[in-house]
Image (cartoon, rainbow, N blue to C red; front, side, top):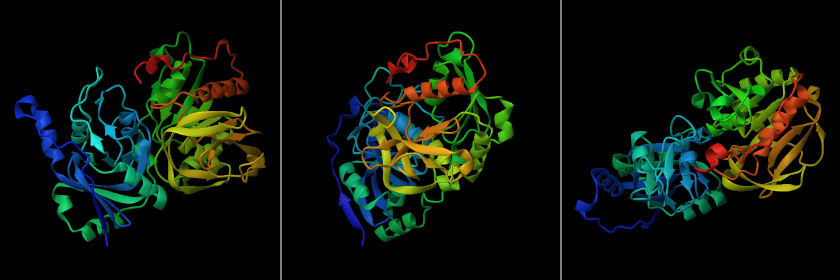
Length: 431
């Protein structure tokens, strides 16, 4: 029997019709349209529509960031997920063209408690509600996101649906059956769906670097965020961004000094093509750096398995220990799968030709593997997002570490002695 909850947490005070614009009136009408968040275990949360009306199906997950909602919804790693924002007030600063992390919104649906009636920020170009409507993203507001988050923490992430407008008029059983008929995240191959179709290049000179590029890298777009190649470019690295379907010949065609695999959505157990590519790259002794999905692919390339976390790590406040330095980093994360590798000490990789490997970083919340470091080949990876869009800049050093690795592995003379950059000065002032 479905459990239905009603959460009237939004301000229902009427606003004088003479004081609102036409867009505000449309938003107010949408806010009075009934909507429901339906979980696969039968729990139902009732609220009102936010963004587009209709049906959205996906995996319900929660994100704990108090800022950066635009970067969150445009992160391709959230493809086919219904994102529950734990921060109560969403939409306060609107949206703009500069803060988007990809070409579109990727969340399948959006769940918030108190949606801002109108944005108030000097950088705002339109409201979040308008952006959701334009891109057809179905959302719900006026629900108790704390209760939803606690339920997901206790029972695990699960399939869910947001229903509004005509769709919400179905019976509770029909709504739950619709959710149960949707595809689970396990076994989903999504990187190819969110990746670019054609390669492109990000040049250092376009991001404040004077002089010739120090190195060039081939970066596989498995759901790459816009700021990642920019962080490399700010440090003098030319980035050739290649589609998720790229082959070893495509990589070799750009003659890279290093190889990078990005974050991305879906189950890493489905990434056989990318694992095969990475093994070929490692055999060529090309320096490798991977983040998030790229960490899981390195784990698989070395012969380790992956598994689904109970509720994942999503937010900009995840504590991680760097075992090399003993320092704790506060990191930005978005992943529901992890690498299954021995936590203590160096171990022989199951794929023996790649030598020894150790877990370099570990989560301080639950001991999940947060990084891998190969000891006999030039390769390392982390499970989090050092580009910090949005989020803390504790992990920015990883870009410099990769540059140092390329310098050690390359015969190219390194003429720039100062490898430190300002703290992402090109974009920090707007975050």
